[in-house]
Picture 1 (spheres, helix red, strand yellow):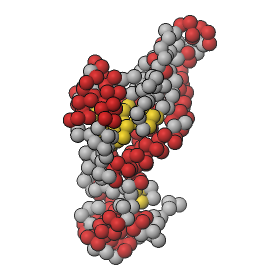
Picture 2: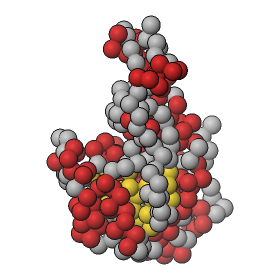
Picture 3: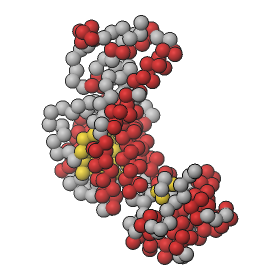
Picture 4: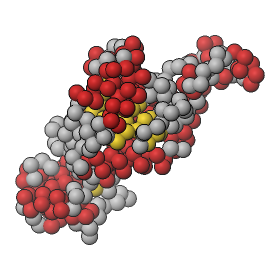
Length: 318
């Protein structure tokens, strides 16, 4: 039977390691004997644990959103720092912000131990080169308006902790995302610790599984929440995108058509006059303004459309 190793047998069979991500999972001890369908069922059952684990960190994640928003409004940046899977997830989330929210690529940045080659080829020893974590903070001119989030599934990655210590010395806000309890003293000096404990992995130590999924959910929530707070959406519509390809051009036009109640041709004309900015086009049409006046209105409203035109909420889908 697949789920055979449990209770005391599990305790006797496990070499003690305080890190949750390094423990053996009693529910998958015989997974190498499973059929493909059994594997799918067991992995899916384990994955269902993840959202609830993330939900336990709701207040910490909300605080991270507030910190990120404050740093962005002060002209600062958000940095993710990690190694291996954790580092790749940070780079992924950072790279998706410009096309989704129209941000400058410098605003959210991912730093991975081993540099760009580590994105496609494992550089496992890079996480142990402690001094490189601190050097990255210096080379990126991290300062008091920045927010540095370390990502360490096990909670112990030396590269990440070195980066966080240096970032704190430079005056930055700091936080960590980990799927294991942090070692004693590791949270000292951090502004936030987000710890979605998802339990042992299906394959022992393979944090690309539950820990990776939990990490992606957390990072997506932080950047999405912060961007919404900055006015990057109008309702749930992405209005700070720019039409840089055919798909985004079509989406831009459809948003303007829906929000402003105009024809496709009128939407194209509005977007052309707004230099392809959906947000600007909406404010121009709603308030009967030219581009420069609309930009000024948005500036006064902190970039949030609802503040610029509070009496004109976006339509709600039926």
